[in-house]
Length: 131
Image 1 (cartoon, rainbow, N blue to C red):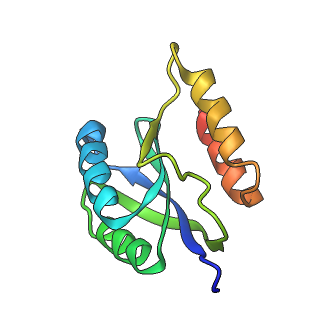
Image 2 (cartoon, rainbow, N blue to C red; image 1 turned 90 degrees about the vertical axis):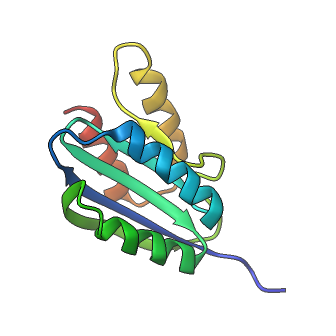
């Protein structure tokens, strides 16, 4: 029996002015459900941090689509790795922002999900959360 592994890409980018994050999230959730992608989208008003994970081909095609999206610029991959199991398996695509009402709860969930992730990924989310 072969062991299933997943590809996980973690990247950052700068959002273009006036970007509609809710529209991006709605579109992402639809596409990700079709492609078997899970992950997390963080937006602080000016930057995105996103983790996408799933089957190798699905992640590759999703990231190619992301690279061509004009709603953001300055894409930089922070981590591209194989993972033995999904770290965001139950999130079709979670949107995380720091708000006065639920910011701490969201950050606590993210920290739990990132416990086994590379240090660079954990540090990037920690830095984004404190901006």
